[in-house]
Length: 77
Image (cartoon, rainbow, N blue to C red; front, side, top):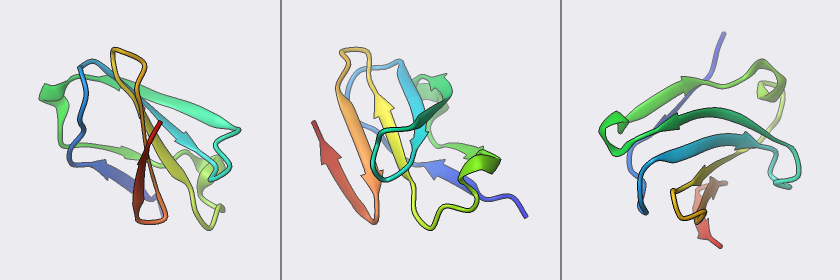
């Protein structure tokens, strides 16, 4: 059964590149480029990540600022 991920809000400047990553943030898969008007945005978790116990959603805004959400916490870098 597929797993869906929903992004309900983001900060920063549109457009946003959406990635799914392992929690180590080393291997990431690009999902889509969205704008503020696309929020809330949901997508199907790629099959390769379906067996991962945890994963991260990385959002990169127009100014290359990263927003990362995993394990119930948000970190900015």
